[in-house]
Length: 510
Image (cartoon, rainbow, N blue to C red):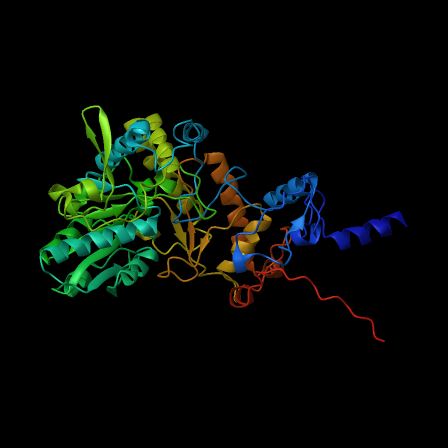
């Protein structure tokens, strides 16, 4: 009897051993109750007019244990870099040293306010100035805009600088060229800025078709947005020739710097003729990545675009730092295209990034790139016999290894492999991107994973791939051990249920 009851209870709760099924917070708490005792609020005259609320707010009341357990249980259903390897490609989901977190929480950084008098935030401004110096040094560029708050925000900053430069010379151009191997945000940013976007194909090697690019250049092309290393995990060997051709045609070169982790300390983008490039501090230079932010995407600019950099920026006068803003720009900075944000950028991201750079040093940053590339090539060569790697013949990859679902059993796809990896204890790699590869699987190990960790992942992915090639039917219903089974992703995207509604009360028939 006890066993039967236990089975019934487990079926009812949905619990899996110590992985507890968690109800919605609205289903746990009760509206109108509270977990704390509060004194009655004093009666005061209402000053809200017709905005005063007359209905209950509808939030559930929970005790402290209920609240703590609810969010702790939810956190256990989430995957994190502190739990294991994050193989997402094109994202650089690496471990970030806790030293940088400690620095970001220091008094004077964590509690700084953007409206404080400049005299009271000299240390914070010094951090911004010093970080700007190192970003310019590492990229070989002329200037840097620190205020953009994410990669796509930085892309917009670079495109606006290009537009300002073209406007200044009276040259209205309408087209931005985007190679197939560029990040998807590149054409989106160009279109958002009002440009027509045209595609440049890739070669059989997965790199930009230089001949096609040169053939399309003309007086209507404002520039090219290129990702290097690209989303196929390859370095664009013709980058200098691409830049020279675009410049000769009167355009500018924007580089997506999301993959800078692969070349930091090894290659200076400025030496490749690049005019603007955003740097995701939350990818290369140590910031917690994901969860919607905060991010930071400083944009380094060439000498040609530096005069058009957005405000504000920090300058140093002897031992004193100050902000150059609209009121103080004067004629010397009169060509700026304006502002990207209300204030000055992300202070927490700046402190983390500078701490990361200073603790690594020049040799350490160089090793970051070398180890990231080594790890990616180890994964590529360890799995190319069981998963098709369409560009393995193109030479060593850079920061990420790219596979396709060609060669799997009929009816099996990348999605089945991704779901199977969940049962093996891994967050899936990036899937179906880049679009130039059918059923793409993009794996970026970064520099922070050990050989032992990579060997475990390689073994798991090899096992799942072999099951997919053999047509294992259990793979079609994976994952089996996750908190949730496989979803109907089409319905989840088209008809998402995002709002909880109190179920209607059943009414007894009279």
